[in-house]
Image (tube, rainbow, N blue to C red; front, side):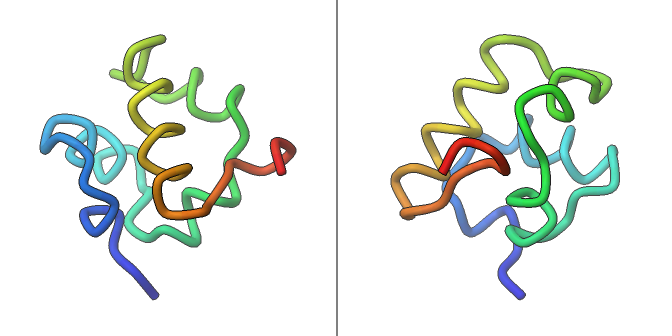
Length: 65
């Protein structure tokens, strides 16, 4: 399992995801945009950063493949 820190996102975004229980890339790919919006501390900019980082690694959120 790959850690979410491996995606090259800013530390703040990684901390927010971990605080909300998402620690792996696999856990992140199980989320959709709505799931991200529901996380405390994630807004429009955070969703954009996450989706762009995933795209750079050939990954996508659930429902956007």
